Amino acid sequence: METSRSNAPERRKRPRQKVLLTGKLAYLGGNVTADCSIRNLSDEGAMVVGPQVHLPDDPFLIVLKYGALHEARTAWRDGERCGLAFTKSWRFSGDAPAPMRRLWRALLPH
Image (tube, rainbow, N blue to C red; front, side, top):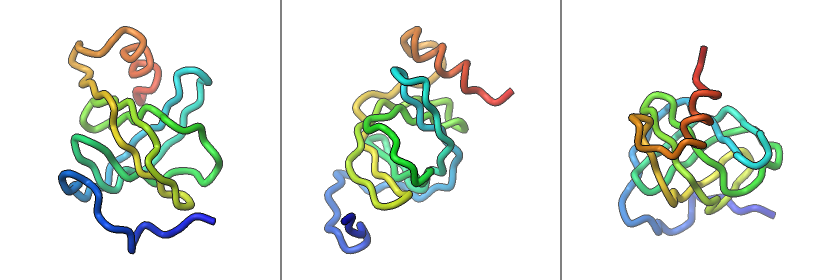
């Protein structure tokens, strides 16, 4: 049984900014992607709302508005909500490794 995060103690180093952004969860190995809403965001992580189907852990979160790709680990899940902790981040201004740039181009809205 999953527990609600609303009563959990705050463990973040810095607070996240409340946002309402469009994102994508992507998984390089399985060619799986899912649309999501990003509800809060910081340099270290995010809380996303996505499909309530079981997706693999440790996705890449693509923040379309900011041109950012975050390699992440799943910190927690609660129904359709998921907390992600970023392990690496790139901006798509050329510093991302080639496989990440290909993933970004494949997922850009046309």
